[in-house]
Length: 106
Image (cartoon, rainbow, N blue to C red; front, side, top):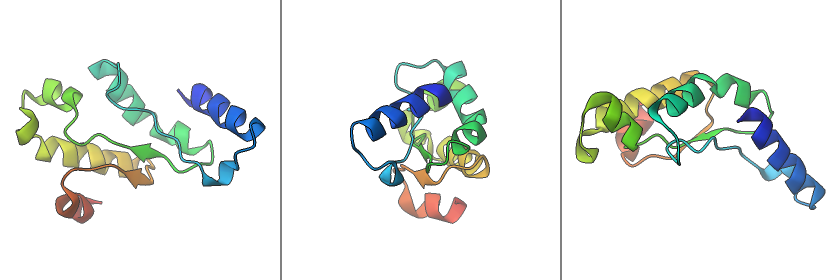
């Protein structure tokens, strides 16, 4: 994923976009298995080394439901755990549903 995102940033720069305004997003949940999503969260430090802010959107994702057996409206705790882990691993930008609780954890 790091190589892919690095290539995308390079392509955007070559097309004239200023990379200083970019953030990278590993795209948790989109066409990925539970294992892929967990690996992406664990690999966030590698993405931070690209030198761009890293965006993570784990809030209420289906992989959290598969890990915990919880329905989408019962995923606050797993969402906050994923958020805390993402911040610990270097995430800079967080896409969340439960803003107040997420801010308290972050």
